[in-house]
Length: 173
View 1 (cartoon, rainbow, N blue to C red):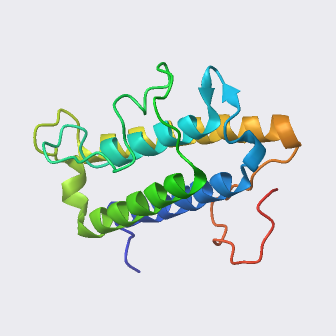
View 2 (view 1 turned 90 degrees about the horizontal axis):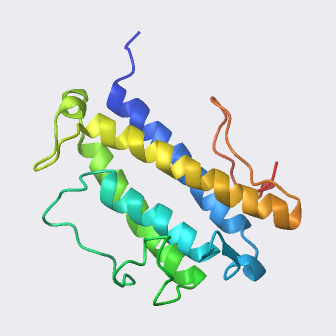
């Protein structure tokens, strides 16, 4: 029996985390999209979470990082009122772009790469990935709390070993 590689585990965990992200996004009622939580509209919380995932999962110091087309300066900063408004379609498209980018990145990794630092970066790839899991799940928890508080339903999450649900399925638990 062959042991599972670390990069394969990370790839699987990322697929599961992105499934949960999509599920939470799908559970957000339209009437909450512009509602403010902590001074920021709910959609800006989503953008902040996704922008961090986009920039920090691979290499936050990359000289070739390109902001998404929907970006305006400081849009990811929850302490600054947004100068633009993003709709659900824009956020969804950005999510799918990130999902594809991370998939390509993770298929290129090998176990030995995880303990290496990306160019110009002070952290290892493994540290960056774990940090983004923490950040992503912090914000998913906040978003889930907003949803529960407003509609009384909690978006579904995956237990270890659960298969990814196939449609049709109940997006709530």
